[in-house]
Length: 576
Image (cartoon, rainbow, N blue to C red; front, top):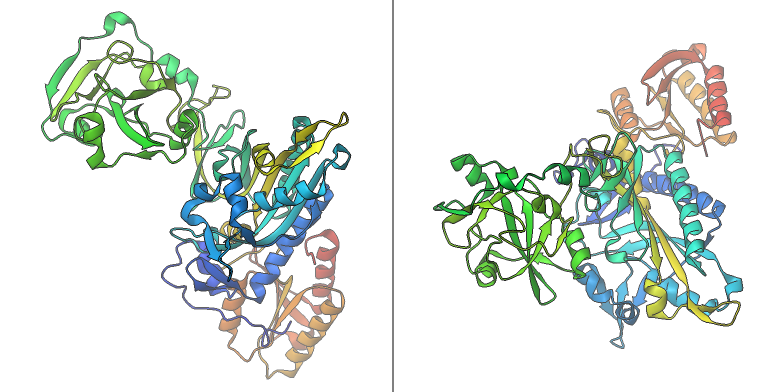
């Protein structure tokens, strides 16, 4: 491709709203352009990278036995109502009506559609198992689109669905997809982790794993054990039982209950700053409401409630922290002074609180707190569980031999064991060998391909611009001709371009009538793995070889340049 004809404009500065390195560089290097908040056009350079990502995904999906199809973006709303996800997705679901006023949604995912399809096509155990996948645009009405492609309202996704006759079959399908994901992300050159995760709005009965690209700007916090390799999303990470056990104290050391005056002192920070009370000594009481019920959740003052764990325990989706004005009506006192003693609400007590010998809590009376509050003596321990986020540095819940470290990650893939969540509700059943009707056992497996593009850019850049892995770069070689008026440079550049193109090497020739500084700056932004500079030494058939990743510069013969590139192609260092 001749760069004078390439539909790509580089930008000296990125728009102010571009917060992340990947967002800034993809815009500046001419890979994407924003049409509206969370909605992007992929320019030719960006589209070439996307197609290479799709190619890797297709190869590994097919190698794992999955078959590709393509499903509609427009989905009848009644399918979502039948699966009971219509309300769960809420405002993120983009809805529309046709001219007959029939309601549709633009698909954020396709569990309902694939289940509806398979129930009408497969009726016998002899047709199972089967795994189907597609690569398609999805739609979600994100409340606050941000970080470029990392959180958009329209995005490209690979979603796959497995159908098995039993749970053993699902385990096998899940393992195949899990291993295929590892191969995909390895081929993309990513630094990533597979972590235990919450299934969220997709749901399911058998657990799930997220694949996280490690990046400082990641929205997800991952708890990792350096000893045993345990890794879990903060939403899913289990609190260490060893730590809770270590906190027990003898009954003899427990004081009497005492109320003390704390005028205007509402927060844990104020208790610490004004009275010297450390957060670990405080029992924090928070009121949650949902599903027509209210609960008081008790965690230590240095811990935070994990609302995912809370919803799993109660079985109520959409639990929310009660607003300030509602607390007084539910607890009999305004927020800041609520405590568990005498509170007429169901108490969900975190295990770390239950293990405290005694603590300090709100007194249930304005401007007062209680000291010497003993769990089990002063309030009941009927509902004790893990209701908090783990804390960096606490013991690993799996091995107990090391402390958890925190990392930030970008979710790039998610695999779920759905079980019968959709097959039962939507009637996807089969007849077994005895003629008995049974629900199909399902799994689903997603990769955000446009999100993956951004995550790779986030991990592969420097102060000059992008640095693409060879397997994903839009072009493999970037030829820069320094002077368009120099006939010897033109002859050498054209010879090199023709030789590489005929050899099947994706080559971009910068033959624009621009200053050398502009060409070098654009090449640095675009991030193509190998740059060959045809300059003042062209008369002696010498060119400058530059590796984008290693910043290596060498003066070599034109012939050696060709030989190196062909050798890289042969070794896999350059791919088509």
